[in-house]
Image (cartoon, rainbow, N blue to C red):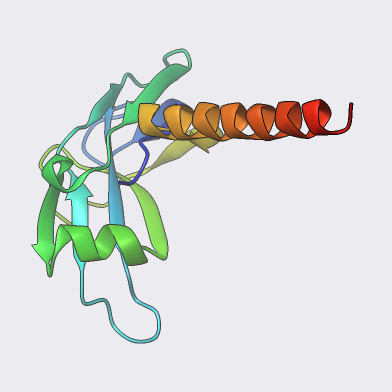
Length: 139
């Protein structure tokens, strides 16, 4: 399973028709390598960033059920994603309406799932048990 993506975002933007518009941020994922993309999807979840607002912490869940598939298969896409784009889109569609603006992004990171922590704890327990057995044998 693919971990969610967390980031801090802020926006200031301008549309031709009205200055300082808010942005509705989504993620676009595709697998274009080695050729044209066979699988494409956008996040169903979006984050509203008020123009000129403060930093907003956002977590985008990324599982097959959290994506709107544009082409292909979400599970296949999540195992082969090579492009991740942040875009402004009120509806989960791509390509979006063009917006001239500035989007600040800081500290993008994948968040481990609970299963990862359980597996890691199990590994540490196994290592501790083996070390303890070796300590008992050497005495």
